[in-house]
Amino acid sequence: MTFLEKLRASINARESLLCVGLDPELDRLPSSVNRTVEGVLAFNRAIVDATADLACAYKPNLAFYEAMGPNGMQCLIETVRTIPADIPIIGDAKRGDVGNTARQYAKALFETIGCDAVTVNPYLGEDAIEPFVAYANRGVFILCRTSNPGAAEIQDLLVSEGGTTSALYEFVAWRAHRWNRNENCGLVVGATAPKELRRIRELAPDLPLLIPGVGSQGGDLAAAIEAHRPSAPAIINASRSILYASNGSDFAAAARASASRLRETMALSLRA
Amino acid sequence: MTFLEKLRASINARESLLCVGLDPELDRLPSSVNRTVEGVLAFNRAIVDATADLACAYKPNLAFYEAMGPNGMQCLIETVRTIPADIPIIGDAKRGDVGNTARQYAKALFETIGCDAVTVNPYLGEDAIEPFVAYANRGVFILCRTSNPGAAEIQDLLVSEGGTTSALYEFVAWRAHRWNRNENCGLVVGATAPKELRRIRELAPDLPLLIPGVGSQGGDLAAAIEAHRPSAPAIINASRSILYASNGSDFAAAARASASRLRETMALSLRA
Image (cartoon, rainbow over all chains, first blue to last red; front, side, top):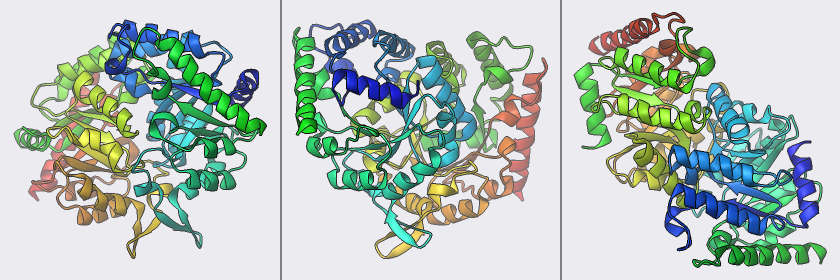
């Protein structure tokens, strides 16, 4: 089963486009949770238990685990094992390195940690992405237009190539088709840039999209939902607005309520 | 003491521009070394012992440690502790993520692992780099023109901005000056692209350069040495040509001989 097949099956089974970001910060854990690596694992398990029928995917960002050291990486591996086997896991790593090194990152993410998909950075070009794409049954989401306030500084630069001018993010969206030789590539596009999101959907009607930036980052949920295609899903990530929905001992129920509201908003729009 | 002060002191003390890349691959370890995480740590210790008077810096690439799982990350931390305190350590991580997440990566690299400097990716713009730059006594090498065969695909694209046209890597070299508010930024430029290296040195005469790609990748050592300035060093990285100089039990002596040759070639050129 390919990543895309697994993702589509999970979307259909849960009628959900919601991806839950598992980005635990020790300082922001609910007061009832121990501020230790063990506490983080218990927190993640509680969040997964509370949302596994609502989330079409989970997306742990490696930074939060690496900041906790070797035990944090073990916590990530155990978190991945906690997630029901039919829900795809996207390792949000944003890696980009030369071929020999990229192979090691691909091994770390797909084999050592056990992710179904990853995020990668396009700045080094195709040979930095190829070792991930080579895992034909895993997914590779290429950063295209990111959700941070300064994304435009580099990504909106106008580039000239072969007689045409486009923004760099448009070039990446177009070039991703060439990198997609195993039909396992997608694009990362922030909901904070709805105009660029629509443009990317025009350029890449056939690629799955991973859309962060709704929730705490204030992105445009309607534009994100509009980008969804049954054959090329647009999955929509929220992290902090779910994880930290309550600071009390009811955090898991509050996370579920927050996830449920997001999922329902998406489902209503899709039916409309 | 800032990173740049530490780096210059190490260069002067050892009369060396050689940075040794600590990128251990289980499959390539000498036959006398156990192909385990413990073997990797013993290997790294032997390499550091054999080269600490020749190397102005060490550069472990995180991919090789992450591929070994949580114990690999512990191995990296113990390797960092093995390196003499006056030799700067560059965590080659090539990270780039949104601000909230970049702060976690900066914590991982500077605090949890204990690196003196890092490498970062410019695709997300300034706010992805700022959390690293905020550590004023640490160094931040920004990817500019990388050493891989496909670097040109994105980095040589012609970009138009403010009425001028330049390659994207030139724009990054220029923009790095704005990002350098704590005077702790540098650039990564592959020795495999000598023309672009000279151009970057013109655009950024005052920034330290980290130059990979000599040795196994076949880069232009003379062009790399020519880029050196006492006030803005160009340090030159070799990894595989040193680490795997011999497959026998003499690997440490062979690594020392390989490192010594490279250091001496650099020193002769600098004196000429």
